[in-house]
Length: 150
Image (cartoon, rainbow, N blue to C red; front, side):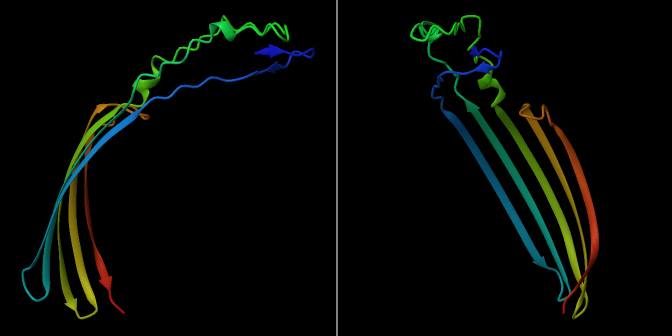
């Protein structure tokens, strides 16, 4: 980084490195539907999701010999700058498991009007807080309503 005569910072050149990102995702899904009567249908779902991902350690190249530009002698001395990215790989790690259950029913009141009701419970275990931190927790939802067919 150099400063021109006005004092504005300028950047000359760049550096980069490659790092692998690995992820594993597994999903298991089970769904069941049962016509209890001609008018009533029951259904249920069980879902299990498991995901892990991580970025390999980021090792930047040694650029200490390139931090001063002797050709232009612009005083481009970056030896005070830290090009260390040790913690970057931990930011990208995530490891979570989510298990959810859903049960419901639909009851046909008339040929065009159906009552529906269902409930869902989900439990998330976050073993490595990612961008938003640890999100471990659970929730449940209970819904009901009417469906009108035209």
